Image (tube, rainbow, N blue to C red):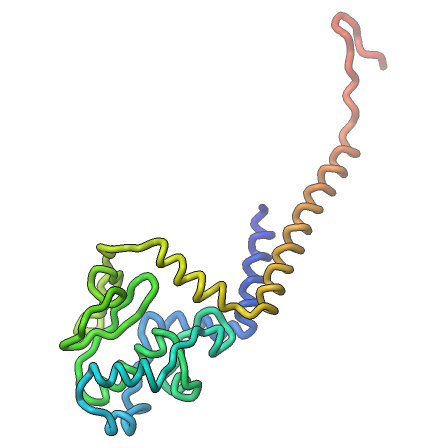
Length: 221
């Protein structure tokens, strides 16, 4: 496929997935530096115990019920601010981690972000490991000075990872957006194929016919 056609496919995909491209533009820097905001949760933090495990349980079960960005913001991936999460009242693991880290910061409890291929969580003193939240599956971990250290994980379950990503990005996509995306891909693909066929037909009409001359004879003029 020519480069121009590839760009058209990418542009169509971006416009369907992100009608407002600003959502993805602001998410990239936020993913690198999560927007922790202790001030936004300071009053709430004052009502919670000083036990980080209790705060984490409150965030995950009561404050931020799980929902993927398709359900909350109408896009496949988005990194929200603390205020946006509290306003929506739901969010994915990134949303939960940002709010949880903000609550810990408001209480003066040290916390760092840790991420795997499929999950983002907050590490803190006394954090209990789980199958999806432990050092063996981590690909990036925030250091006490705020810098990030990347590493190849010791354990990777590719089948489970594929199921998670498919459910997160593809299965949760609204049917009308999926239909629009596939229709665009189909039309762009047909446009490319029709252009190929039209070019071949035009070329065959322009090329002179080759006269086949038996061996030993001179071609007639």
